[in-house]
Image (cartoon, rainbow, N blue to C red; front, side, top):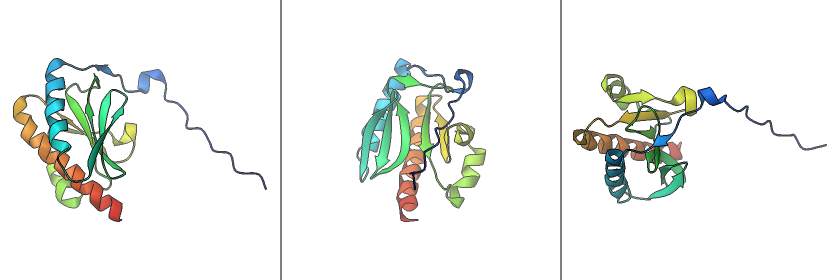
Length: 140
């Protein structure tokens, strides 16, 4: 019996794909600060990914921060919650800096948009939640 052929995922039209822009100097600095902190967390590693630094806890990806490229909305990074912890759902709904990328880029992806350096503390808090959620996702 012949092996089943894998179906190729249909490519999105160019107009529907994320547009990557050169990173701003301000976002470059914020990303460097976030990356330095994330790499101090247990089992956190970074890998390059399409102009971003993707962060993993073990083999589970939990975030992607702009390194040389950024997308719209500008000043954003990605974090993954799959599934979204129930205690965070209400906070996601009221934090206007958070958006959903799930429909476009896969289940569980959220954006956090930095508007000033004052947002870095909250950004790190959300990234810590994604880091912790990645450990829980691995267990289920």
